[in-house]
Image (cartoon, rainbow, N blue to C red; front, side, top):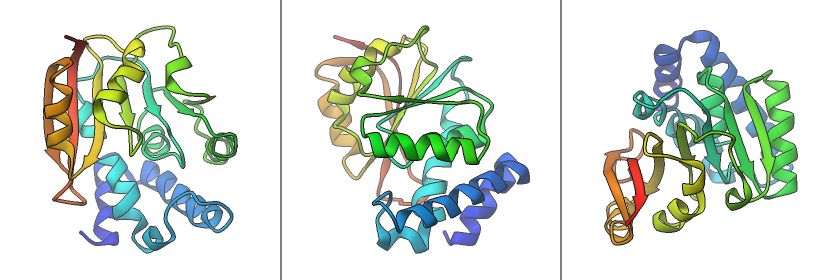
Length: 206
């Protein structure tokens, strides 16, 4: 998929006004990545396929999620959390331990006028939601079993987990099934066919 095709998919799927917000976010990432290591410099020419569409493709996988918060664990540069907030009306909580990233996320949400975003500094283990969250996402944060253990206290049986896992998706699911039960399956990535996205619900310890 080309950069233009990725950009068009987002606008066609979510509407031009929301696609425009994502375009503005792309410019922020390009601008700020020259000042701090938000995304790899080698991926900036492919920012739409490698980062923005890679994040946006998670949203259709959450269609059956109940109302409530989208929790993005280890948000970093805001992928996928900022993209989800731009493309949905759902409240989005970004949990990020690094102070400089937290500052970037808050500034970005303000610049994009994303009023549905809350940025929390800290690790997800210390974050306590007032109600079980509807969606949990995490991109390149931790091995699946560890991630489930870290965020499980924020979820319930209705929570949908959408977790890009690269080439290791199937093996991480196999390992997680030793200690976790629920519905797990792997969706192929639109942007990297050899990569997988773990989609899970009804997750609970064995």
